[in-house]
Length: 313
Image (cartoon, rainbow, N blue to C red; front, side, top):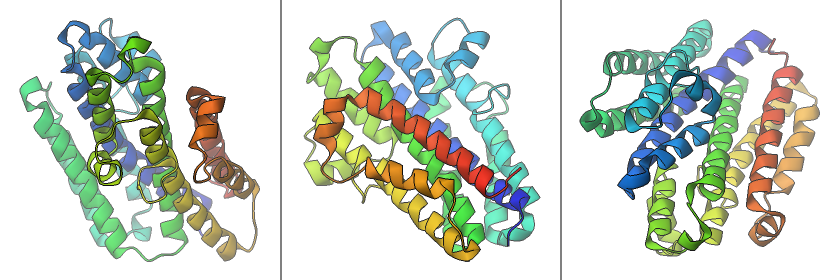
């Protein structure tokens, strides 16, 4: 049986690696969105901060929402525990703590990503270099993921790591979708406009779903289709349904390995019940914002229950 401290290290290692990539994608989306209207780019950057879930911390450090202040806060600011620099540092610390549970390839890819990010983000970023830096960050996390999935034994070590990835990813996708509907559009009159379509395209890009969406819907940017794709499509690797399919698989293996089910298994079934195929109409009837807020709270509860049930502390 895996020690709770080791399970905790694996879970948070992968959560923070996922967060590194998510922050890079959110800033990338902000860059694209800010190009749609130069007269109100502050609104777009404010939505990026909201999407990252760090509004209060940002306001304590900065007075204005600009490309410089937001990108610096989300990428370089070590006082922000969710910044890329902070997250890769925390991920590496956890990886070092569970070093003997990792393959050599996985540890080396994490260590290399840590060195690369520290080097790239050592100085304030020239905005002309920002797209290249964001691509490099995403590439480093992809290399970690490739090493991890290509070399790790599918045992309880793998399952706790998987839980960290998908709890974090589900939270990120839900937040991005919620900000789009609740904050991003300046007024209802923009819905269906070319601006609205460009913003939707940017949101899809921020969760690596732009091309795959076009394969399914042929670039028909309808809010119901996009919400259905990012919430209920079980073949889209960043959708809520896919994340919970993977969480369910890992929790099922853990229940089998440990010979018992816990409160987190009940919460899992409750959440999956809300993510049934074809239920997007009922989600809109209740209210997308309300659905996503409830999902984020439930997803956080599941993460807390996993930690408690498997004695992370």
